[in-house]
Length: 107
Image (cartoon, rainbow, N blue to C red; front, side, top):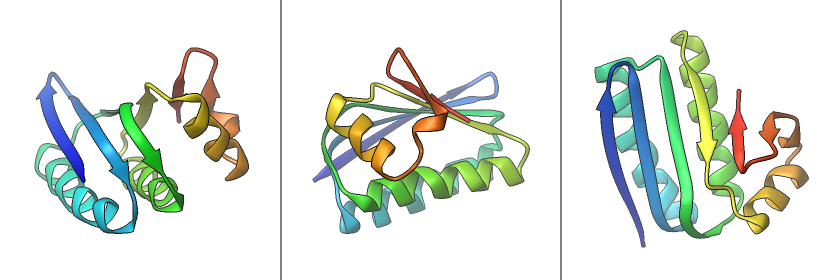
């Protein structure tokens, strides 16, 4: 089960995820996030993963898809609360170049 809370203000959309990101959960959350991005057109989306207990390759797809979408709309993605396990998965996926030392991923 994956919960998704969103808050928007002043051109920033904050998305807090809580639970496990697997294929089924990623599909549902992706639709919610995309709908909010298209309706609000934020310049920055902050994806908070601090309460994510598990993430597989579907989470990588979720992140990269939102990054591409935002880039096409002139926005950026910032990822916060990256656990050591998630950081390892991002490195394996070749995304480590956009990771910052304080548990953030930016692009």
